[in-house]
Length: 369
Image 1 (cartoon, helix red, strand yellow):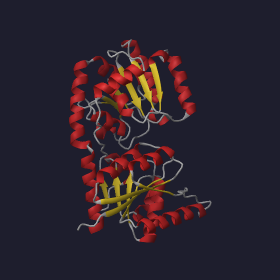
Image 2 (cartoon, rainbow, N blue to C red):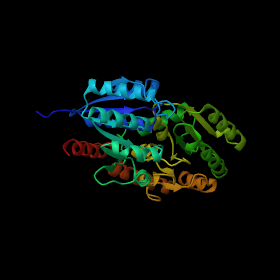
Image 3 (cartoon, rainbow, N blue to C red):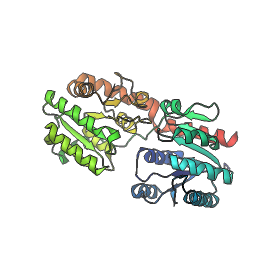
Image 4 (tube, rainbow, N blue to C red):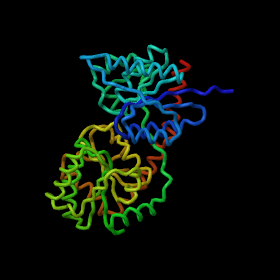
């Protein structure tokens, strides 16, 4: 009888984000050959709720920052993770965020358990990364862009593009439902930007471009889906007023089903002005065949084949962002072509099945190496 592999996933994030959603999808996709558990901080209430609802065993532990002024809290965090490792007895520790990487590397060395770092963004301070990366047994990068920053080490690093599970959803029914809820006519062109609201995500750039689009497509509506920094959110609301598009702008707040809003839209925009590790929102949009406009910063160029499956622009260039948005919203033939190509590209590169199999290959090489 085949022995099940035990994997402990570790994530410190205080808020639910794309990294956490992707981790949960991977856990679910691993199947019965794997026994999994999640260690996280209790303060991420939404993440904790989702883990519990998924049926995965959950451990809440403290994960303090590594501070040179006082190493005592960090040492307590390591001790807590070591105790958990001895209780759960994992074969692999799979860490998902920066603080989790550091704690897992130390705890792995102390317990003799193999550690995988899953580097999903550009937030790991490079001097600290270079100091500690030897403590990880394997490192998985979310994209080639992240690999270029951190470095390729044959036999120790891999690039596994993020996947997602194709949603089981009636796209037309969700389109009808959302548009009815927000009193948007079926024929109205709608562009949506989805994600946590903070300056790095470029919602302000989206609104500035929307004002230009509105001059060309007078019936257009623009939706911002997500929640985040309250002061920044209020500044966005004021910006919409100042730009004269407040009546055509919808702030939906947080929703657990952002793909439904993508169904309701004719265009999904990702306008991050900070480099993205890959941009999960683009992959989700592609899974339902929605045309996309993505940012040139970071790895969206690894998701979008420019001009074929979507359009890539510098979101700080308002005129170019507006041109891209308006071209998709006003050109039915272009929209249909991008939509069809996007869905094919999703199935080829970004279906969860591919990511899961590549991750299992890393697990096996680590345990059998």
